Image 1 (tube, rainbow, N blue to C red):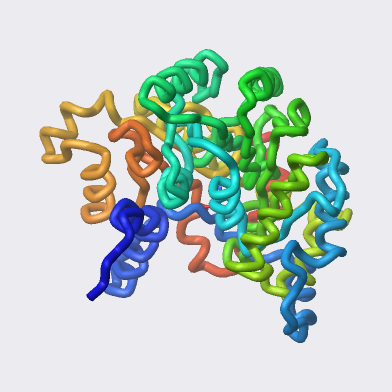
Image 2: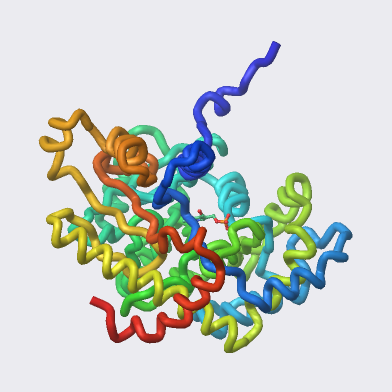
Amino acid sequence: SLHLASTAHRVATSATLEINERVQALRAEGRDVIHLGFGEASFPLLPALREALAKSATATSYGPVLGIAPLRQAIADYLGRERGIATTADRIAVAPGSKPLLYALVQLLEGDVLVPAPSWVSYAPQIVLAGRRVVPVATDERDHHRVTPAALDVAVEGAIAEGANPRVLIVNSPSNPTGGMFAAADVEALAGWARRRGVTIISDEIYAELAHGIVPHVSPARFYAEGTIVTAGLSKSFSAGGWRLGYAVFPAGEAGTALLSALRALASEIWSSAAMPVQVASVNAFLPSDEVSTYVKRSARLHGHTAGRLFKALTELGIACARPAGAFYLYPDFAPFRAQLAQVGVPGGLELARYLLDKHGIATLPGVAFGDAPEALRLRLAVSGLYEAGEALHWDLLKRTDAFASADP
Ligand code: PLP
Protein backbone atom coordinates (compact mmCIF):
# COMPACT_ATOMS: atom_id res chain seq x y z
CA SER A 1 0.00 0.00 0.00
CA LEU A 2 0.97 3.66 -0.36
CA HIS A 3 2.25 5.69 2.55
CA LEU A 4 2.44 9.43 1.90
CA ALA A 5 5.01 11.64 3.58
CA SER A 6 3.57 14.20 6.00
CA THR A 7 4.31 17.11 3.62
CA ALA A 8 2.19 15.41 0.94
CA HIS A 9 -0.86 15.82 3.19
CA ARG A 10 -0.14 19.51 3.70
CA VAL A 11 -0.25 20.72 0.11
CA ALA A 12 -2.98 20.92 -2.51
CA THR A 13 -2.87 21.78 -6.22
CA SER A 14 -2.09 25.47 -6.75
CA ALA A 15 -5.31 27.52 -6.57
CA THR A 16 -4.50 29.26 -9.85
CA LEU A 17 -4.09 26.01 -11.76
CA GLU A 18 -7.21 24.58 -10.18
CA ILE A 19 -9.41 27.54 -11.17
CA ASN A 20 -7.97 27.37 -14.68
CA GLU A 21 -8.98 23.72 -15.00
CA ARG A 22 -12.47 24.52 -13.68
CA VAL A 23 -12.83 27.29 -16.27
CA GLN A 24 -11.73 24.94 -19.07
CA ALA A 25 -14.29 22.37 -17.89
CA LEU A 26 -17.10 24.95 -17.83
CA ARG A 27 -16.11 26.19 -21.29
CA ALA A 28 -16.11 22.59 -22.56
CA GLU A 29 -19.74 22.41 -21.35
CA GLY A 30 -20.45 25.42 -23.52
CA ARG A 31 -20.55 28.02 -20.71
CA ASP A 32 -19.32 31.51 -21.48
CA VAL A 33 -16.71 32.30 -18.82
CA ILE A 34 -14.82 35.54 -18.27
CA HIS A 35 -11.56 34.26 -16.88
CA LEU A 36 -10.13 36.74 -14.39
CA GLY A 37 -8.48 33.98 -12.40
CA PHE A 38 -5.28 32.90 -14.12
CA GLY A 39 -1.99 34.79 -13.80
CA GLU A 40 -1.33 35.25 -17.47
CA ALA A 41 -1.73 37.94 -20.09
CA SER A 42 -3.04 36.72 -23.41
CA PHE A 43 -0.84 38.72 -25.75
CA PRO A 44 0.62 37.15 -28.88
CA LEU A 45 4.22 35.97 -28.85
CA LEU A 46 6.78 38.48 -30.08
CA PRO A 47 7.61 37.59 -33.74
CA ALA A 48 11.38 37.64 -33.05
CA LEU A 49 10.88 34.93 -30.40
CA ARG A 50 8.52 32.88 -32.52
CA GLU A 51 10.87 32.92 -35.51
CA ALA A 52 13.90 32.09 -33.35
CA LEU A 53 12.10 29.13 -31.74
CA ALA A 54 11.13 27.76 -35.16
CA LYS A 55 14.84 27.71 -36.02
CA SER A 56 16.12 26.26 -32.75
CA ALA A 57 14.13 23.01 -32.81
CA THR A 58 17.29 21.05 -33.58
CA ALA A 59 18.96 22.04 -30.29
CA THR A 60 18.15 18.59 -28.96
CA SER A 61 21.13 17.91 -26.69
CA TYR A 62 21.06 18.31 -22.94
CA GLY A 63 22.23 21.80 -22.11
CA PRO A 64 24.56 23.15 -19.44
CA VAL A 65 22.80 23.01 -16.04
CA LEU A 66 22.87 26.76 -15.37
CA GLY A 67 22.00 27.76 -18.94
CA ILE A 68 23.80 28.39 -22.21
CA ALA A 69 26.54 31.03 -22.11
CA PRO A 70 25.02 33.48 -24.66
CA LEU A 71 21.75 33.55 -22.72
CA ARG A 72 23.42 34.08 -19.33
CA GLN A 73 25.51 36.86 -20.87
CA ALA A 74 22.50 38.52 -22.52
CA ILE A 75 20.55 38.41 -19.24
CA ALA A 76 23.45 39.91 -17.26
CA ASP A 77 23.86 42.72 -19.81
CA TYR A 78 20.11 43.35 -19.88
CA LEU A 79 19.92 43.61 -16.08
CA GLY A 80 22.72 46.18 -15.99
CA ARG A 81 21.35 48.14 -18.95
CA GLU A 82 17.62 48.18 -18.13
CA ARG A 83 17.14 47.29 -14.50
CA GLY A 84 20.04 48.83 -12.59
CA ILE A 85 21.32 45.45 -11.36
CA ALA A 86 25.09 45.16 -11.76
CA THR A 87 25.96 41.50 -12.32
CA THR A 88 27.94 39.13 -14.54
CA ALA A 89 27.02 36.07 -16.61
CA ASP A 90 28.63 33.68 -14.10
CA ARG A 91 26.11 34.86 -11.45
CA ILE A 92 23.05 33.95 -13.53
CA ALA A 93 21.17 30.64 -13.31
CA VAL A 94 18.62 29.82 -16.02
CA ALA A 95 15.87 27.29 -15.24
CA PRO A 96 12.50 26.00 -16.52
CA GLY A 97 10.59 28.93 -14.99
CA SER A 98 11.28 31.00 -11.90
CA LYS A 99 8.93 28.81 -9.84
CA PRO A 100 11.39 25.89 -9.46
CA LEU A 101 14.14 28.41 -8.73
CA LEU A 102 12.10 29.95 -5.91
CA TYR A 103 11.48 26.50 -4.46
CA ALA A 104 15.15 25.54 -4.76
CA LEU A 105 16.23 28.75 -3.03
CA VAL A 106 13.93 28.10 -0.08
CA GLN A 107 15.34 24.56 0.10
CA LEU A 108 18.93 25.73 0.04
CA LEU A 109 18.79 28.76 2.33
CA GLU A 110 18.79 28.37 6.08
CA GLY A 111 15.77 29.09 8.25
CA ASP A 112 12.11 29.99 8.10
CA VAL A 113 10.66 32.41 5.58
CA LEU A 114 9.01 35.80 6.04
CA VAL A 115 6.20 36.28 3.53
CA PRO A 116 4.09 39.46 3.26
CA ALA A 117 0.32 38.90 3.36
CA PRO A 118 -1.15 38.96 0.77
CA SER A 119 1.40 37.23 -1.48
CA TRP A 120 1.56 34.97 -4.51
CA VAL A 121 -0.23 31.64 -3.94
CA SER A 122 2.84 29.40 -4.31
CA TYR A 123 5.24 30.86 -1.73
CA ALA A 124 3.56 29.29 1.31
CA PRO A 125 3.12 25.78 -0.17
CA GLN A 126 6.72 25.83 -1.43
CA ILE A 127 7.96 26.76 2.05
CA VAL A 128 5.85 23.99 3.58
CA LEU A 129 7.17 21.46 1.03
CA ALA A 130 10.71 22.51 1.91
CA GLY A 131 9.94 21.73 5.56
CA ARG A 132 10.12 25.35 6.73
CA ARG A 133 7.70 27.64 8.48
CA VAL A 134 5.80 30.47 6.80
CA VAL A 135 6.16 33.68 8.86
CA PRO A 136 3.47 36.12 7.64
CA VAL A 137 4.27 39.83 7.58
CA ALA A 138 1.18 42.02 8.00
CA THR A 139 0.48 44.74 5.43
CA ASP A 140 -2.36 47.24 5.13
CA GLU A 141 -4.40 47.97 2.02
CA ARG A 142 -4.79 51.62 3.10
CA ASP A 143 -0.96 51.82 3.19
CA HIS A 144 -0.67 50.23 -0.30
CA HIS A 145 0.50 46.94 1.23
CA ARG A 146 3.94 48.36 2.04
CA VAL A 147 6.35 45.99 3.81
CA THR A 148 7.81 48.12 6.59
CA PRO A 149 10.71 47.46 9.01
CA ALA A 150 8.23 47.90 11.88
CA ALA A 151 5.95 45.14 10.51
CA LEU A 152 8.99 42.95 9.85
CA ASP A 153 10.14 43.41 13.46
CA VAL A 154 6.71 42.41 14.76
CA ALA A 155 6.68 39.33 12.50
CA VAL A 156 10.18 38.25 13.52
CA GLU A 157 9.60 38.74 17.24
CA GLY A 158 6.30 36.83 17.08
CA ALA A 159 7.94 34.01 15.13
CA ILE A 160 10.92 33.72 17.48
CA ALA A 161 8.52 33.59 20.44
CA GLU A 162 6.91 30.57 18.76
CA GLY A 163 10.24 28.85 18.19
CA ALA A 164 10.67 29.74 14.51
CA ASN A 165 13.93 31.00 13.01
CA PRO A 166 13.12 33.55 10.28
CA ARG A 167 16.21 34.04 8.09
CA VAL A 168 14.75 34.68 4.63
CA LEU A 169 12.34 37.34 3.33
CA ILE A 170 10.46 37.03 0.03
CA VAL A 171 9.36 40.29 -1.59
CA ASN A 172 7.48 40.74 -4.85
CA SER A 173 7.18 44.16 -6.48
CA PRO A 174 5.09 44.71 -8.58
CA SER A 175 2.97 42.40 -6.50
CA ASN A 176 0.78 39.50 -7.33
CA PRO A 177 -2.06 39.81 -6.15
CA THR A 178 -2.28 43.57 -5.45
CA GLY A 179 -0.38 45.18 -8.34
CA GLY A 180 1.30 47.35 -5.70
CA MET A 181 4.90 48.48 -6.02
CA PHE A 182 7.49 49.53 -3.48
CA ALA A 183 8.81 53.08 -3.69
CA ALA A 184 12.61 53.33 -3.77
CA ALA A 185 12.68 54.62 -0.17
CA ASP A 186 10.67 51.59 1.01
CA VAL A 187 12.99 49.20 -0.83
CA GLU A 188 16.00 50.90 0.76
CA ALA A 189 14.37 50.66 4.20
CA LEU A 190 13.60 46.97 3.93
CA ALA A 191 17.01 46.20 2.42
CA GLY A 192 18.64 48.05 5.35
CA TRP A 193 16.46 46.12 7.79
CA ALA A 194 17.45 42.78 6.20
CA ARG A 195 21.16 43.66 6.29
CA ARG A 196 20.99 44.63 9.99
CA ARG A 197 19.12 41.44 10.82
CA GLY A 198 21.26 39.16 8.65
CA VAL A 199 18.18 38.14 6.66
CA THR A 200 18.52 37.03 3.01
CA ILE A 201 16.10 38.64 0.55
CA ILE A 202 14.59 36.70 -2.33
CA SER A 203 13.29 39.42 -4.64
CA ASP A 204 10.71 37.99 -7.04
CA GLU A 205 10.85 40.46 -9.94
CA ILE A 206 8.80 38.50 -12.46
CA TYR A 207 6.61 41.60 -13.07
CA ALA A 208 9.41 44.22 -13.06
CA GLU A 209 8.94 45.11 -16.73
CA LEU A 210 5.22 45.59 -16.18
CA ALA A 211 5.44 48.70 -14.01
CA HIS A 212 2.75 50.86 -15.60
CA GLY A 213 2.44 53.88 -13.35
CA ILE A 214 4.85 56.54 -12.25
CA VAL A 215 6.68 54.34 -9.74
CA PRO A 216 9.86 52.95 -11.32
CA HIS A 217 10.85 49.43 -10.40
CA VAL A 218 13.73 49.36 -7.90
CA SER A 219 15.40 46.12 -6.83
CA PRO A 220 16.61 45.56 -3.26
CA ALA A 221 19.76 44.21 -4.96
CA ARG A 222 20.70 47.87 -5.54
CA PHE A 223 20.95 48.47 -1.79
CA TYR A 224 21.80 45.02 -0.46
CA ALA A 225 23.67 43.29 -3.28
CA GLU A 226 25.45 40.78 -1.04
CA GLY A 227 22.22 39.47 0.53
CA THR A 228 19.69 39.59 -2.31
CA ILE A 229 18.82 36.93 -4.87
CA VAL A 230 16.63 38.16 -7.72
CA THR A 231 14.32 35.86 -9.68
CA ALA A 232 12.49 36.70 -12.92
CA GLY A 233 11.73 35.30 -16.37
CA LEU A 234 9.80 35.57 -19.62
CA SER A 235 6.41 34.37 -18.38
CA LYS A 236 4.71 37.67 -17.62
CA SER A 237 6.35 40.42 -19.67
CA PHE A 238 6.49 38.26 -22.82
CA SER A 239 3.21 36.36 -22.28
CA ALA A 240 5.29 33.20 -22.51
CA GLY A 241 4.51 31.21 -19.34
CA GLY A 242 4.44 28.00 -21.37
CA TRP A 243 8.02 28.51 -22.51
CA ARG A 244 9.12 27.86 -18.92
CA LEU A 245 12.09 30.22 -18.97
CA GLY A 246 13.15 31.78 -15.69
CA TYR A 247 16.38 32.95 -14.16
CA ALA A 248 17.95 33.91 -10.86
CA VAL A 249 20.74 36.38 -10.09
CA PHE A 250 23.16 35.45 -7.31
CA PRO A 251 25.29 37.80 -5.21
CA ALA A 252 29.03 38.12 -5.91
CA GLY A 253 31.41 36.84 -3.22
CA GLU A 254 31.93 33.58 -1.39
CA ALA A 255 28.46 33.09 0.07
CA GLY A 256 26.81 33.82 -3.29
CA THR A 257 29.16 31.37 -4.99
CA ALA A 258 28.40 28.65 -2.43
CA LEU A 259 24.64 29.13 -2.91
CA LEU A 260 24.98 29.08 -6.69
CA SER A 261 27.04 25.85 -6.53
CA ALA A 262 24.38 24.27 -4.34
CA LEU A 263 21.67 25.39 -6.77
CA ARG A 264 23.69 23.92 -9.66
CA ALA A 265 23.92 20.59 -7.83
CA LEU A 266 20.18 20.58 -7.02
CA ALA A 267 19.24 21.54 -10.60
CA SER A 268 21.53 18.85 -12.01
CA GLU A 269 19.66 16.24 -9.99
CA ILE A 270 16.14 17.52 -10.67
CA TRP A 271 15.55 19.43 -13.92
CA SER A 272 18.98 19.15 -15.66
CA SER A 273 18.45 22.36 -17.64
CA ALA A 274 15.78 24.55 -19.20
CA ALA A 275 14.63 23.29 -22.62
CA MET A 276 17.44 23.95 -25.09
CA PRO A 277 15.35 25.27 -28.04
CA VAL A 278 13.70 27.74 -25.66
CA GLN A 279 17.04 28.86 -24.26
CA VAL A 280 18.49 29.46 -27.72
CA ALA A 281 15.43 31.46 -28.82
CA SER A 282 15.18 33.41 -25.55
CA VAL A 283 18.47 35.21 -26.11
CA ASN A 284 16.42 37.50 -28.39
CA ALA A 285 14.32 38.69 -25.44
CA PHE A 286 17.37 40.19 -23.72
CA LEU A 287 19.45 41.69 -26.54
CA PRO A 288 18.95 45.42 -27.10
CA SER A 289 16.13 45.75 -29.64
CA ASP A 290 13.46 48.32 -30.48
CA GLU A 291 11.01 45.54 -31.30
CA VAL A 292 11.39 44.02 -27.83
CA SER A 293 11.25 47.26 -25.88
CA THR A 294 8.25 48.53 -27.85
CA TYR A 295 6.39 45.27 -27.24
CA VAL A 296 7.09 45.27 -23.50
CA LYS A 297 6.31 48.97 -23.08
CA ARG A 298 3.05 48.62 -24.96
CA SER A 299 2.00 45.58 -22.92
CA ALA A 300 2.73 47.48 -19.70
CA ARG A 301 0.77 50.47 -20.94
CA LEU A 302 -2.21 48.34 -21.94
CA HIS A 303 -2.25 46.74 -18.49
CA GLY A 304 -1.98 50.20 -16.92
CA HIS A 305 -4.86 51.50 -19.00
CA THR A 306 -7.07 48.53 -18.13
CA ALA A 307 -6.09 48.81 -14.44
CA GLY A 308 -6.98 52.50 -14.41
CA ARG A 309 -10.38 51.87 -15.98
CA LEU A 310 -11.29 48.99 -13.70
CA PHE A 311 -9.97 50.80 -10.63
CA LYS A 312 -12.16 53.79 -11.47
CA ALA A 313 -15.21 51.61 -12.02
CA LEU A 314 -14.72 49.78 -8.70
CA THR A 315 -14.09 53.03 -6.82
CA GLU A 316 -17.28 54.53 -8.27
CA LEU A 317 -19.18 51.48 -7.00
CA GLY A 318 -17.72 52.10 -3.53
CA ILE A 319 -15.51 48.99 -3.62
CA ALA A 320 -12.21 49.65 -1.81
CA CYS A 321 -9.11 48.76 -3.79
CA ALA A 322 -5.49 49.96 -3.78
CA ARG A 323 -4.65 51.43 -7.20
CA PRO A 324 -2.21 49.07 -8.93
CA ALA A 325 1.12 50.43 -10.16
CA GLY A 326 2.31 47.33 -12.00
CA ALA A 327 1.61 43.72 -13.01
CA PHE A 328 -1.91 42.90 -14.21
CA TYR A 329 -4.06 42.44 -11.15
CA LEU A 330 -6.52 44.33 -9.00
CA TYR A 331 -7.31 43.26 -5.50
CA PRO A 332 -10.63 44.70 -4.31
CA ASP A 333 -11.86 44.04 -0.79
CA PHE A 334 -15.51 43.08 -0.36
CA ALA A 335 -15.42 43.06 3.46
CA PRO A 336 -17.63 46.18 3.73
CA PHE A 337 -20.34 44.20 1.88
CA ARG A 338 -20.32 41.29 4.32
CA ALA A 339 -23.93 41.87 5.44
CA GLN A 340 -25.34 42.21 1.91
CA LEU A 341 -23.41 39.16 0.73
CA ALA A 342 -24.66 37.10 3.68
CA GLN A 343 -28.22 38.04 2.70
CA VAL A 344 -27.80 36.38 -0.70
CA GLY A 345 -26.22 33.31 0.90
CA VAL A 346 -22.57 34.27 0.30
CA PRO A 347 -20.80 34.13 3.69
CA GLY A 348 -17.16 34.69 2.63
CA GLY A 349 -14.64 35.28 -0.16
CA LEU A 350 -14.36 31.63 -1.12
CA GLU A 351 -18.13 31.46 -1.53
CA LEU A 352 -18.11 34.81 -3.35
CA ALA A 353 -15.60 33.45 -5.87
CA ARG A 354 -17.77 30.35 -6.36
CA TYR A 355 -20.93 32.45 -6.63
CA LEU A 356 -19.38 34.71 -9.28
CA LEU A 357 -18.24 31.72 -11.32
CA ASP A 358 -21.41 29.63 -11.06
CA LYS A 359 -23.98 32.43 -11.32
CA HIS A 360 -22.23 34.95 -13.53
CA GLY A 361 -19.48 33.01 -15.31
CA ILE A 362 -16.72 35.22 -13.86
CA ALA A 363 -13.61 33.41 -12.59
CA THR A 364 -11.61 35.14 -9.82
CA LEU A 365 -9.30 34.03 -7.01
CA PRO A 366 -10.23 34.55 -3.34
CA GLY A 367 -7.92 36.32 -0.88
CA VAL A 368 -7.45 33.15 1.19
CA ALA A 369 -5.37 31.73 -1.67
CA PHE A 370 -2.91 34.56 -1.00
CA GLY A 371 -2.80 34.03 2.76
CA ASP A 372 -5.02 37.02 3.26
CA ALA A 373 -8.40 38.57 3.92
CA PRO A 374 -11.20 36.14 3.16
CA GLU A 375 -13.35 38.78 1.43
CA ALA A 376 -10.73 40.05 -1.01
CA LEU A 377 -10.75 38.82 -4.58
CA ARG A 378 -7.92 38.95 -7.08
CA LEU A 379 -8.99 40.03 -10.54
CA ARG A 380 -6.66 39.54 -13.45
CA LEU A 381 -6.80 42.42 -15.90
CA ALA A 382 -7.81 40.37 -18.86
CA VAL A 383 -8.74 41.86 -22.15
CA SER A 384 -11.67 39.50 -21.98
CA GLY A 385 -13.13 37.99 -25.10
CA LEU A 386 -10.19 39.16 -27.18
CA TYR A 387 -8.20 36.00 -26.63
CA GLU A 388 -10.80 34.07 -28.54
CA ALA A 389 -11.17 36.90 -31.04
CA GLY A 390 -7.69 36.27 -32.35
CA GLU A 391 -4.17 37.47 -32.57
CA ALA A 392 -4.70 40.26 -35.11
CA LEU A 393 -6.96 42.07 -32.68
CA HIS A 394 -4.34 41.77 -29.95
CA TRP A 395 -1.68 43.30 -32.15
CA ASP A 396 -4.06 46.07 -33.05
CA LEU A 397 -4.74 46.76 -29.35
CA LEU A 398 -1.06 46.67 -28.49
CA LYS A 399 -0.35 49.17 -31.25
CA ARG A 400 -3.12 51.45 -30.11
CA THR A 401 -1.71 51.66 -26.57
CA ASP A 402 0.34 54.67 -27.61
CA ALA A 403 -2.94 56.58 -27.75
CA PHE A 404 -3.98 55.25 -24.31
CA ALA A 405 -1.17 57.14 -22.58
CA SER A 406 -3.01 60.44 -22.82
CA ALA A 407 -6.49 58.92 -22.44
CA ASP A 408 -5.85 57.23 -19.06
CA PRO A 409 -8.40 58.17 -16.41
N1 PLP B 1 6.17 34.74 -9.02
C1 PLP B 1 4.96 35.29 -9.15
C2 PLP B 1 4.60 36.41 -8.25
C3 PLP B 1 4.07 34.82 -10.12
O1 PLP B 1 2.86 35.41 -10.25
C4 PLP B 1 4.46 33.74 -10.94
C5 PLP B 1 3.53 33.16 -11.94
O2 PLP B 1 2.41 32.88 -11.71
C6 PLP B 1 5.73 33.19 -10.76
C7 PLP B 1 6.56 33.71 -9.79
C8 PLP B 1 6.22 32.00 -11.54
O3 PLP B 1 6.58 32.30 -12.81
P1 PLP B 1 7.34 31.29 -13.77
O4 PLP B 1 7.59 30.01 -13.05
O5 PLP B 1 6.44 31.12 -14.93
O6 PLP B 1 8.63 31.99 -14.09
